[in-house]
Length: 71
Image: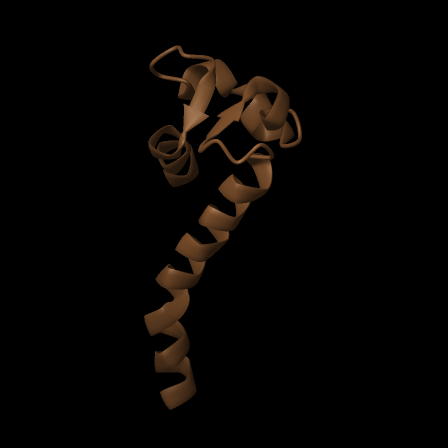
């Protein structure tokens, strides 16, 4: 039972870690944003790129990416 409670406690944190790893993996140039070219490596993100680039700057920022991940 203690192991189960431990896993439930840390599960949300593990999800956040996975999200940040995906963002870092896609942000190949390390500029803190994902370009259309970088997003092409993740077909689901590439398909909705313009929808999540809410400010229309041609890149998905960390905040825009986090919103994408929450859907």
